[in-house]
Image (cartoon, rainbow, N blue to C red; front, side, top):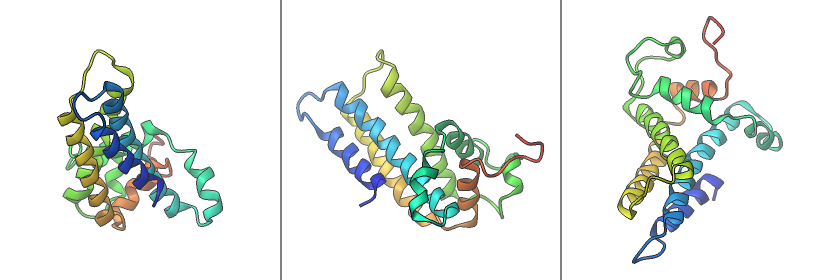
Length: 169
């Protein structure tokens, strides 16, 4: 089992702890862990795409930046879909609903992870967390269907910082 799969299983486990009165710590960690399952899933895919030697992939994975991955996801996701942006110059055809959905889910999950990790004024319910973890399970499955598409690979290259706009941004 990969780290991404292990983290997703751990997120499910944390979301179901303390049957009667779930602790906020468990619910918050479930959201954070679900996010990291997606982060590692995408980073693993990107490093497999660009690093031919397995021994070097872990070192390459350390260079990934959460903000850069989120920015690439925003360019591919629904908010920008159909709008001209620099990444669109690299894409072939239209962005599939599945790829846009994965990217949108990643952006939303990162935002929720930041809230869970840093905003103690917000409380979470088991239902909210179970819904978010369930959506992450769906996102993993959607990624497995989309991962070999040309546009998914463009997204991964952008998330690794290997593609730039023509003006260098």
